[in-house]
Length: 429
Image 1 (cartoon, helix red, strand yellow):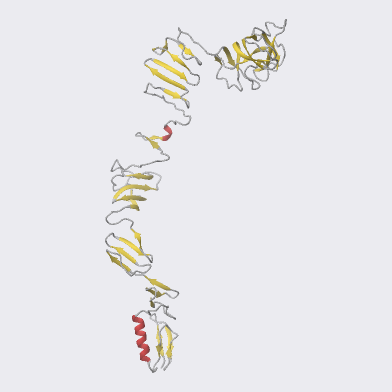
Image 2 (cartoon, helix red, strand yellow):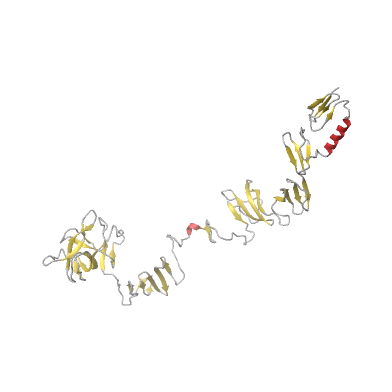
């Protein structure tokens, strides 16, 4: 009668006929009924089971769940029906175990840390901190607020002390129960208030609030760019206020005297003693000669009276102009014109209508005073200047000058015929 060999799950592995030996159903020899010498095969099978098929090569025709001890690599494996899967060991001890194979686990009972063997050394799995160090690192946590709402946060520990909390929420919440150092959990990262020493140290690139009053960064004026303010700017030092890259304009105070200095012009504006907000002594305006000490009055370093007018084109200083054109003034293009209105000022001593516009569109027109004039032809000091066209002036010939066409009188000689500036006393009738 044949032997029917069943697996643990009840499935039939194979049928062995009487007097035969089956060596194909699995990795062991299975003798049938009345097979001569069957005992040796039974003994071999028991030994193979005891040594878990110890061999440098995997057993052939393995069964699911069969064990194989790889005598070369010293690794235990189990057949899962597809591949031999390594069975690693786990050791709990105060010191690292020896004779390890890749994948072995070791729980360090001293430091309370789990390690895995890489094939050459144990690699720490976690936690990153030792038992002696205490809880240290970033640990996910759930905090319930005073409205019973749960919030996922990241808690930062050092030596068992909660140093910081990072929240992904966009609004603050109050933890319940309370957490020491964190009366309120703010959005982003915040440090514990348990100790005043817990601060961000080093260099940062930006901050949303500054100062003890929790002011916004936009409420401060910059030192490297233009800024405006609607409030009063106060300096308590007598060194005063300096404006410009080189302190070109400065304000200083000495008692009741206020001094304004323009460094570029090597001069200054000096207000004398101030009584009840009124200027009671000298006010001097200088160019390169410094402060003028004189009786009360105003002194200017330049010498013409000018007013800004809208021009129909950009006009260079010294150009002779008249009323007309597509705007208010235009250059004089006629010879001996009786419509002359003035000369474009180079540097006005007194400027009227100063805020009308820039020089390109609203040049200052000098109507009286000492002004450089664009002139063509020879000129002798004292000659009367009249228009020559193209915005230029020339010396009037005998009999040409009238009360209506004279621009002014030359203060310098000009010996060549080409265009050049001639300083003149301009008086427009």
